[in-house]
Length: 62
Length: 402
Image 1 (cartoon, rainbow over the protein chains, first blue to last red):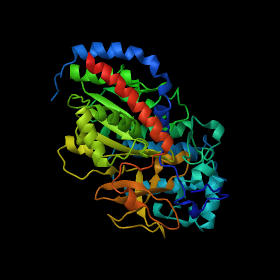
Image 2 (cartoon, each protein chain N blue to C red):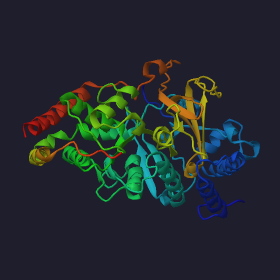
Image 3 (cartoon, rainbow over the protein chains, first blue to last red):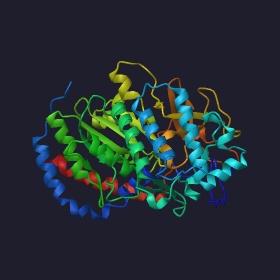
Image 4 (cartoon, chains in turn orange, red):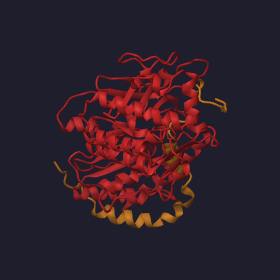
C-alpha cells in the first residue's frame, strides 16, 4: 500500500498503519544481517564440544 | 487558566492518583474511579496536544461534553507516525524512541515519555510482569532475545526488557542479540547449562527471534529438555520473516525444541503507542489451577473494546473487529488509541488475531486468522534465512561430532 502523508488526524488513518511490530522486525533484521561475521565464532566449536562432552539430561525440578 | 505543565498540581496529582490506582492491584474493580481518572487525563491531553485537540473538535467532543470514558475519541495508531502526540514538551522526555514503518522507513512513530510517565509505565508493567510471567519468583536467569538498550537506544522492546532484567533477572541474565546478530554460543551454552543444573530459565523477547532459533533446531533435530518452571515469553508480533508459524505451531515448537509446555508460554502484546503491556493469562491460571481459554488480560487501569471496521461501533463478545484501547498509563501521549489490530473480546479479556489493512474495504482477517503472525517473506529474506540456517546447521554438525 502506498504511503500517504496526512495533514491532520482523521478516521481515514484507520486501517492504513502498515507496521505490525517494529521491534520484532528489527530483531529479525539484526539476526538476518549478521552472519558475515560467523567466522569469528570458531570458538563456538570448542565451547560447544566441551559442553557436549559433559552434557547430561540433568535433573528436572518438580 | 489551568496550568497543565509537568510541574503543575494538575499533572502531579493525576500521576499520583494513577499510581495509587495501579497499586490497588489487578482485582480492583472501581469503575467510577477509572472513569474519573480517564476524564481528567482526557482534559490534560485535549488541552496540551494540538493535533489531538483539533481531531476532537472535528468530532464535536471536548472535556466539557463527555462524562464517560467511552466518549473520549480514540486516535488512530498511524497518527503517532505523523504527529508528535505528547502532553509535555518533547525536550523533557526521559524515554524517546521510534516505531519504524515497515514499508516506508521515513514514517516512524515518535514515542516520548517524561519521568512521571516512565514511573507510571514501570509501576504498571512491573506489576503485570510479576503476576503473569514471574508469579512466585524473585529472580531467575533471563535470556533476552533482543538487543540491549545500549545497542538499540531507540527500541521500545529493548528499553522495556532492560527494566524486566533489572527487576527480575539473576546476575547471569544476558542479551542474546549483539552487534554480530544472535549470540548462538551464549544461547546454546545457557540452555545446556540449565538442562544440566536443573535450574529453570526464562527466555524473553522477540517472537521472530525465537521462531528463527526453533526452526534452525528443528531442521537438525536438536532438542533440549529445560527444567520444569522454565518459561518463554514472546512479544512483538511475528511477520513471517522466517516462514509461516501459526500459534499452535509456535507452542508445538516450544515444547518440541525446549521442552517448555504451552502453559509456560506467555505471549505479550506491546505497542509503542500504548504504555501498558497485555499479557496472556496462561501461566498464572495454570499455576492457580484455573481452567480458562488463553486470552490477553485487561488490567484495571485499561479498557479494551472491539469495534466494527466500517462504522467503529462497539461489537459484541466474540465478534471480530478492531481493537481499541484506553490506557491511563498513556498520560504522556493520548490515552485512547484506535489500533489496526484485529481481535475479539473473550469472557475475561481479548485476543488478537492479526491486522486489518484497508484495501478497498477488504478484510484480511480470514487470511491471518489463527496465525502467530503474517505470512510475508521476501526473496531477500528467504535468501538471508537460508544462509543463516546453513551456518547454524554447520555449527551443530560440529557439535554432534564431539
